[in-house]
Image 1 (tube, rainbow, N blue to C red):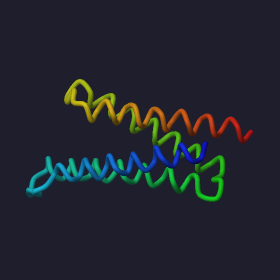
Image 2: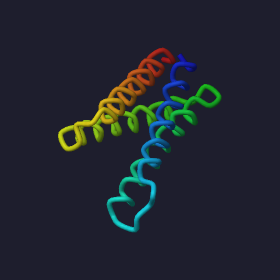
Image 3: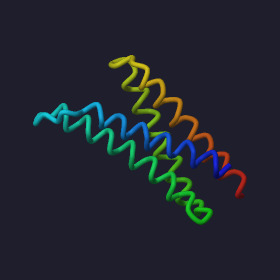
Image 4: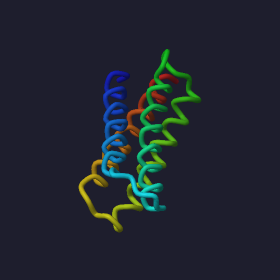
Length: 110
């Protein structure tokens, strides 16, 4: 289970890096700032997943990771009617999968 969550977490980080790479060349405007900020949030979510797994993470860290993953999945769902692009479907799928994996991981440790 941990290996699968790690793979999904690295995919999340990769999604964030790709998201930021589409912001180049950087322009000094609010749209670019929001775009880069969203990419950083995606990367931080992936890193949080890895931290939650470190040393067989506690229930608290796994719970926080589940909440963050669910929140990001929800945000991608909100973006769907606006963007309706393939990367939004990828984001929904990856974060939903990560949420389910962490919930399963939490139930197995009880």
